[in-house]
Image (cartoon, rainbow, N blue to C red; front, top):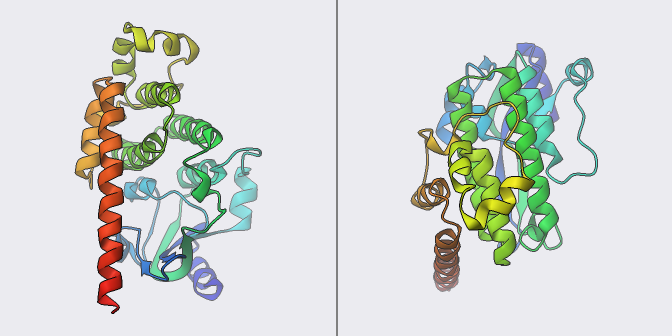
Length: 274
């Protein structure tokens, strides 16, 4: 991994080298891909910045890329201490400041999933995970706004934002916190819808507690998005309409459907293995 990425950085004069990876599912030993394989093949070997490849705003992480030390030091890039998801701030800042990003489509890393005791395995039960997710997304939006990125970058970021907002929203079982998280997502994703919702009884308290986002970000949930699946599309529609109760019922039904589908798939794999 190091040999290939360092060689590419030297060859291209790149400040960041992004590479692909395999997912490894700890419980089953199965492997899979996660990044957009067609996009990575198209960008393989090329050098670009975020404006030239705005799709990179969909891919947040630091473990799938190599950074030049002088680039980090010159830009004062640091993790925000005391927060979970600290890679979000580092990744977004590096993307908007880098002038030369190179990409290799080679799968050079195994990312273990479903590891007992890991931070991501504890996301569902932890309010802190949700709070830090919201904090980091607010940071990312300010960073993009201050950098003056174009609509295509915002559109790609919106895909990432809705995917992870939906993941966190579906994990919340306490309805009071579900509604609070819902309003805060609404505020970041569609400020105009949040202003309209503020007049409703359920949202009045949250409207006073949480100010509008800084930096005047666009209406993320109104932007046309690539790769939006049906569940994401329905979630976006419900959030824009400011319907927390309907969203809660919808996500509960989807959670049941997901568990059933997972059980059927697991059983099918067992039968195929004999």
